[in-house]
Length: 629
Image (cartoon, rainbow, N blue to C red):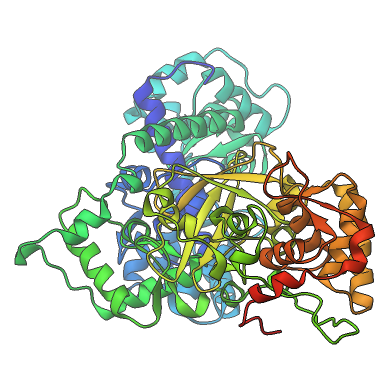
């Protein structure tokens, strides 16, 4: 404010402003609202915590908390009130001008008849009753909000309008006693001039009195309200205090400051030890049995929310209970028991539930692009070109590479070596994204990752938060062995094959930090221009019977100096989804692939001159007996 107000007065006015905003939201939505709904509708960009709203509305005569929802107080007794009583009640609770349509919508919501019916009834009542004053086309106030000027005597007007009992009146009356306010401009200009000069919100009766003193017979009390309603520079609070738009912005800043302060001192959801509460033995006096209708509210809450919720979310956002309240432990125990026993609900994470019917169907299916594709191509001697070899038949370190836990893949889980429990417990997950997972927006849920993600049921829902604080909704399905929901993020942040992501835990259950260090895996990375060449080969392989051996031979011809096994597998998979064991078996089984001395046990080169030597007969005894096409 241009003129400093005591902090207590600023807090008082900001609380009125916040309550006015909440009243407007409740009137607009025409139904009771849960705290998160009320916060979202009235925040105007300010984060409003549940605790702050509860604190701000404590003692409110206009907004009440009933059946775990906020509502306008006059609605609780609307059935017993006559229509005219509801009109006046609504105007007094709003405390500002209201249009005919909003009044009709409110009466329709309260009484259930058609809006057209109430529009006709309202038009007649508002026109006939002197207690209602039209300040604009079908916009009304109460007559007693106008300055009473039945006398031309200044002192009499002061008394009739109770200005002598207003503690702000003497100072403001003295401040403007010798000033000319209406010399030029319009009514809105005069009001802005007084408010800005006062440096604080001014009650509409004082504003009207100051203008009446100058205009006398030319003064129209409804003109003040028209100006307040029409002019974008002016605002009015339900207390009757008028202020400029700039002052309103400053009060909103105070709301934001206070909300942040309350949020910092409140108990956060993540600080609640739900596991301990669920195990806690309670005396009979604290045991709570939730009624059937409460479970129905949970179902409605899940449908409206559209995503799984934690027990603590239900407790705070739906039941409006905080951990400090005596009935919290008994309620959360009853809630957990009910959800666990009801077949409509499914646990999808640590103390997190969803309606089974709302769980996306696609997360229980493996995208086609991830499935290993086997095509039978036979030699002139009617033998399979591509065969799978057992570990003993694989050259060098290929057996270890095929069974490496970090490269676990769809349709290849049987090959993964058993992972010791100690290796599952890690501070982060490192995952190099293959091309086929980039296409499907998935990530392989590996045995290596079990302990890290903490799966407690067959399906888990979680949140990934990236470095921009964007939130990604993630599903993990144990049956498919996949993590879903990364497609758009992949496209916006990664190269198509071999980019590395890191996943770190947070202090919230089922919530993880997604980190992109712009790292490329040395073995899996394939450059974009090379991918284009391989996609051309993919078209060729799809147009005719082409063995994995032929695909590998073409690729190895491109890499004259040889290639690491995983890099070869990555390139083969861009052409056709193929298992590591198949690639390793061909490398080990055909004479044209060999390991040069001095290289790693998974590095191979290609000698085109040995192509006519075909398959190594000594390897036939290692062909897997269960290798069914």
